Image 1 (cartoon, rainbow, N blue to C red):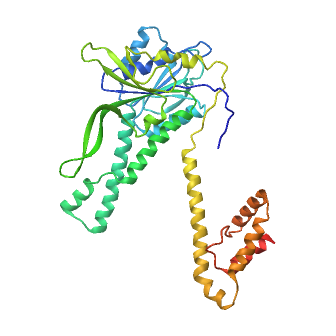
Image 2: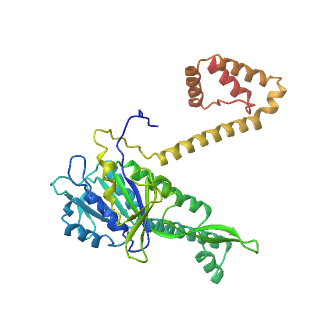
Length: 387
């Protein structure tokens, strides 16, 4: 858990640009190199190119207008795991090293235009659609392996075996995993403490409707939406839908949302410029930096531990019920009376001592809830702890 006072903190750009091919997404995203830091120096920009060299032409344009491209470093990957490694290095302020022609990391640090170790002020991830596709394909291959095991177990051969394996599709749990990966990615981006621009391809928005035969069918709404990880649009602060005007050929952007309030949702920007958002950076002068760590994996682990503990307590209660109920009844022991005595002693404790007692019982492997406990020996041990 992390808290802070409700004072003013620095605002970082977290922007999604989506649209069709040649709609200007990459060119607009690379305008991050035109931004100025609060000390007046130009942004240093990390570019993750998943589209296979799609940023190169746009970088040439930057050089033509005088941008020092030593402040830009490009990483080529289509792996979500490798992208996560890059983000971790930024988050931990690790040193970035040059790679040789064989793709091996050297011991030569990457430096910026000032000759200092390269540390980005912003990151452009060009191609989140690709990262979703590779993640989805990885899960599909896993599904094929599951079906291979099932085919072997069922003794399938020939065409039946082939269809069983090649006909594998993503299961519900795979889609949940894919959505989780997308949410984790965005939270990672928001946790690295620098400005972020993402690009994605577009697709037709569809809704599920019932046809005249009572079957569910997908129907296009006529709107274009981003073709990337589900839920990506909830986490980013600004979304621009990029397109080329069919009549004039002009590159335009529709503001889908903008929490920074630089533009209003529904605005149409002709020949859009990312530098409209330089004002957001300028307002960060004298504001405190606050980075909200991405603890999604840790939160899942905490929840898992809690459920495991509850399951263990239930198991102990059921085990006591199955082995001691008859003996307890034959001995004439009043189990409910012991429970009431335990609860009465617990209720006399102040909150801090209750918490300490609960931890003490858990450490001793004893239950902290007694409704389903029927083992007299266990209850007596709990009562002895209170005494």
